[in-house]
Image (cartoon, rainbow, N blue to C red; front, side):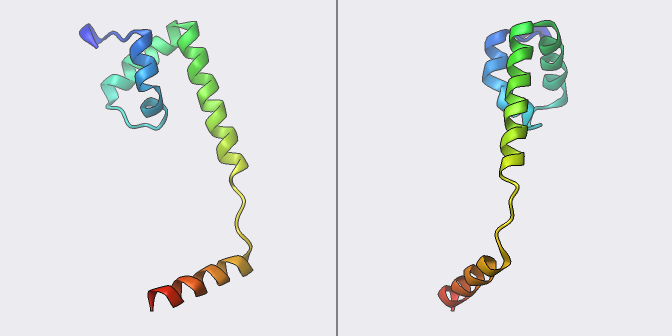
Length: 80
């Protein structure tokens, strides 16, 4: 990233870390500006964010309490 600008290749390389909130603030600022100005990159970021949301919501089920009790019992017997 020279002169604070990012290009589309850099966006693709850093998009996951950007969406995970793992980049320093100066990188976030320059990537956000690029995503706002570049339709292709902005569209890709929006798709990736929607996909993450859909996966997170689809995997939000909790195991039944009876299964949790069985698993804990098994783990306790293995640790002993």
